[in-house]
Each structure stands twice: as C-alpha cells, then as structure tokens.
Length: 201
Image (cartoon, rainbow, N blue to C red; front, side, top):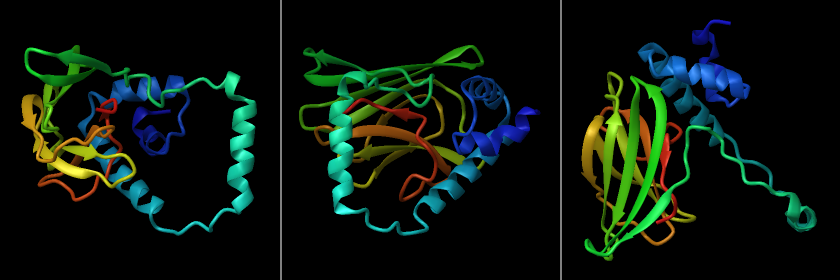
C-alpha cells in the first residue's frame, strides 16, 4: 500500500507498529501528508467532543478498580509512540531552577529534535527547542501548559528550527508542557495530537 494512503489510519492509531514506523519515516519527508494529517487530527478531535456519552453505572468503577488491583503485578506501562522518550528531571542549583528535558530522535534530515523545559522557583518557565523542522505552510507550532485536571492553556507560538520560548503561562506543580501543530496565529485549544509532552514539572 502506498504510504500516502495510510494517513487516515495513522490519525486514528490504526496501524501496526511496523506500518507506523514506515509511515513516520515517510511523514518526515512529505509536506502533503503532514498537512493532510493535521486536517484529519482536527476532525478526529472535533468528533471526540461531538457527542455526550451516557453516564456509566455506579458499580462499574468499583468493578474496574477491583479487577485492576487483582492484576496489579501484571501491569506494564506502555508508550503510544516509540519515538516519545522518557523525560529527565535535573536540578540546576546554579540557575535556581528545575530543568526537565526530553530528547526525541527522528529520522528527519538526520537531526535530533531536543526539547528542554526550564521551570523557575516562581513557576515561570521557558522551552528550549533545537533541530525542529519549520512548521508546514499555513501552520505554526504552539506550546501549551496543561495543569492536572484542567484545560490546556496557550503558552506561545514558534515557527521551528532552534528557539527559546518564554511561556506566557506559569507552570503549576504536576502540570505538563506540550507542543502541537496549529493553524497560523494559534488556537484557543489544541486541535492536533501533541508531538512533545514533558514529564510533570
């Protein structure tokens, strides 16, 4: 099957691991597919909020928790994408700030994309980015501060390459910072899946 035909299945997480890896290699070199994927992700996000699910039975939560407790020794955490690496938190005493870094390696012009989140004691923060390709035509990269159990807050726009972005929102404890591709000018809420998510700050 032609890689161009896999965009919709990729947007819905319906590809096998081998197909996902092959498609992501193709995606790093195909602007047409990146634009189509961004449009499909917007549609998928809209569908997720298009209906109201019925309330589950009260006993369902208890039965799920009981089953999970019985199987706890068998639980293994899984990552949705192989190219999302684990975050590394490092105390930077000289700068009196917390640094959370995440390095992501992609076969994208043989470069390594690196994100480093620096959170100061007053919870102001900046995001350092290197090796990120330019945003597709008509699009921009947007950073988000996502507090626990609250809606994402827009935190700044950038176009790619190497950048130092001072976040417009403070980063509460246990919040994460994410980056998405958005229409030029940014969005009020994310319209695509984040391709970078920091560990909780």
